[in-house]
Image (cartoon, rainbow, N blue to C red; front, side):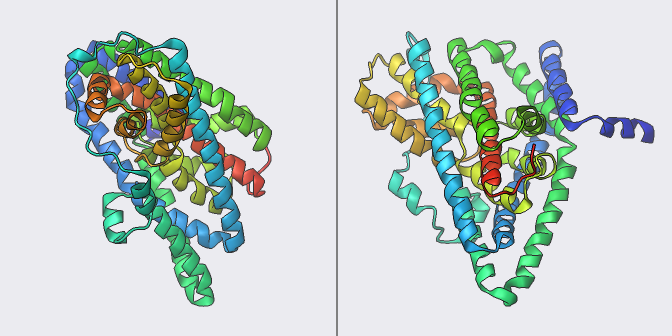
Length: 409
């Protein structure tokens, strides 16, 4: 038994995860009745990952700020990070809109048969910006309000630095807590192959082969959008700016990309991304633990691409022909909406109302579109989350290179 366990752990994690994914597809197709029996494993896996997200975001950012020590360096890191994510997000919205206009996946969509799905009132840009400053940080931690947690964690880290010698015990405690969480993540990641198997098996069992074919044109556009964003935006940044070998980067990125695909959550990908950035890409822990949690909240290339694509899809399904002004408004609002999207599955669907309302589409019409897409959104969400995970690691590598905080490669 011990020898079998040693052989199992000797296999690279990404290979075990890939095997779990293939086994899940096979189980869902050929023995769908078994999928509900193991579904709890997938649920436990997602809960374990999400259990770690809030403490990792708070502790890693606060410890990262204290490790940087020089507030001017933190300002440089933060400014570059936000500008890079703004750039990749705008590119992603443009890619999604371009594919939608080129392939026209929404033309002739039968929205009349869809059941409207209530969205609630979309948050205004003012409310999103004001909400970054928490009234009650304990409530924000309990609710997983990532932008508020990031804001408080950065302020807390600055406070520790400004306290000087009196703040050193807190800085040491944060560093120790960060290392403890790092090892806890490694333990949880060993469950990934089994969690992926259960999640994929249930998705395939619930929808059959249709999980890969329903809403075919939209699925094709999402797949092409993810590939285009990685090839046209991320790869040049990795090779030309971060000056990393493409092979080295994606060999390291396999684990977080597979976790992103299986969980459809940018936040759930954060723990494994932190491990990969520090161990495989050799990025300075202070940089990785500062940028990656921020990226999990605002680095939403997949969401941005999908919001742009789905906005064009919606106009086509509703018979609306967009003019250049409408397209420009959709590009701007789509980029801003993606920044404020929660890092959870299907969150982008609920930002669609903010984009469409800006070009005159009513909430009732938007609800029809969401009702049409929602039954098939799981696979689409799994696919587009890969682009978000790739963007997060890409921006981290670029900023690390600019800060001389990454080993050559």
